[in-house]
Image (cartoon, rainbow, N blue to C red):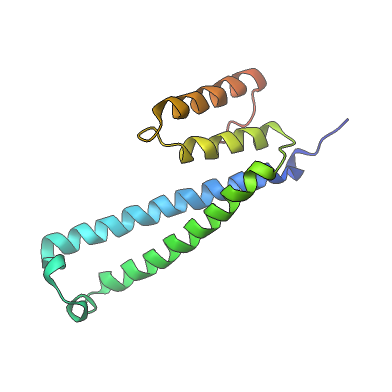
Length: 133
């Protein structure tokens, strides 16, 4: 029986989740760069709200915050749906494992994180697919 790998909704959901996660991480790093600069150059914590609003960086940070929140909400919704979804391809299975690997942080549960990483590695070695995750 032929299975259309592109039809795996789990693989697609995981691709979207991972792309949004990467974008959220990139935006967070940018926000941190701006904040660090404002702390160093303008004594940011001591400024009033009105004083802060005079800086273009503050407006960029607000935009970044909004986008980070939207991506976080999307990721939480996708994450909540994944356990009920059935993967129909290796990419779907590897995608779920890749998401789980990110969500189970090593500083919170190192053994579980390492276990998921080893399952993903072993599955890829056995099946030779899902390498994009």
